[in-house]
Image (cartoon, rainbow, N blue to C red; front, side, top):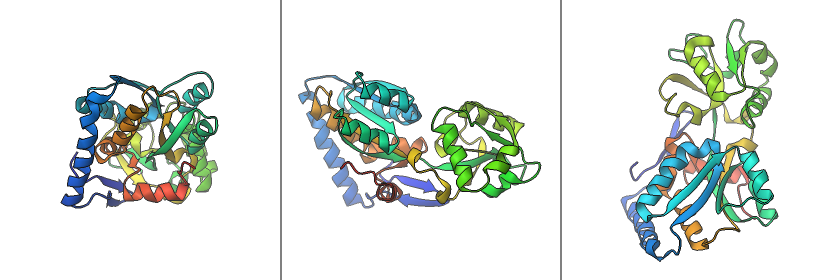
Length: 290
């Protein structure tokens, strides 16, 4: 992964705050000192839930955490809304990483979560089959006569609703939907159909293009951030009141938000919270545990 984490978004690249070898040494020393406590924890496992979209990052991150600490992570990734509803009821977990800031705030206000911190952010892009046969260059091209649009408006929230909201903000929703040759209910399925040349263009989260089955198989075209629907952009991570060993849960959250941990989220196509762009979005979107 390297000492320097790079974030590529909308055609530019940013480095996280750790920019010098001296800073890297400090960061490494910090986490090294933290992991010396691994034999001091009374438990050897930790229960972690997250929304399913984060699984591509959490699975390898959890594996690395176990390598460093010996702690087994009992991980569940599923629809954030369902997990959140369960946690607001009688269900319990020790660490929860969810989508949409409002969910974390509800859990805090209900006394279910001790604290939350920004984890990462998502962004939206247009995708076309390799070679971009329809010559798509900007979002308004989705309204051109003859352009075959592939969408998943019925995908589980926020998938379909977020893309529809984005198109409305861009002022193209009506014409783009009229051009839709596929109106599916699964983002991954419609991505497969696009890559099978059943359409010319779609809108997905950038993270979808970095999944192993899709990586390097599509052309990616940026969308101006001004059109992004804000609620789905945010992912947080927090320690729940039912954490059996608070120090262990804190240690895990610190790892996930460390340079090493956040590199897994960058690799999965997210914008890490500790990057320059991530800190900008943290401030812009008000991801603060008050």
